[in-house]
Length: 106
Image (tube, rainbow, N blue to C red; front, top):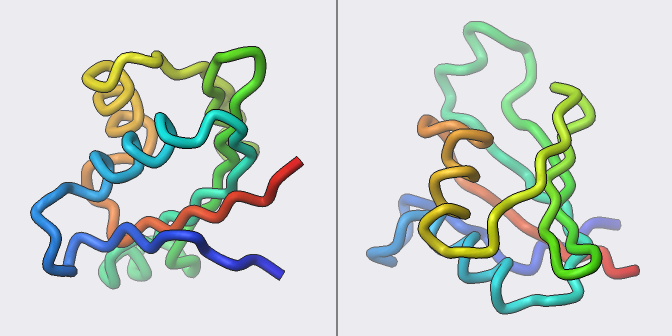
């Protein structure tokens, strides 16, 4: 059973963008093997029957990897916060809804 650790929702009271929160979470957890759930806005259902997407984010040998099996992409992500944010924004997309991350462990 998936138990989300943190719901990174843009509609909550926080001033931080969900991508900023995700960068902070990735940098704070060095032993990371997580599933990132990307819940798209309601209007995405017009184009697809699925309202979300799931990707794996894990760290191995000090490098953070982003694995998207559906889109068949597997880039490694920079460790620097500004570069990580821009890379995650381009991978996830700017029109995301809420993000949930759950560390599934090793």
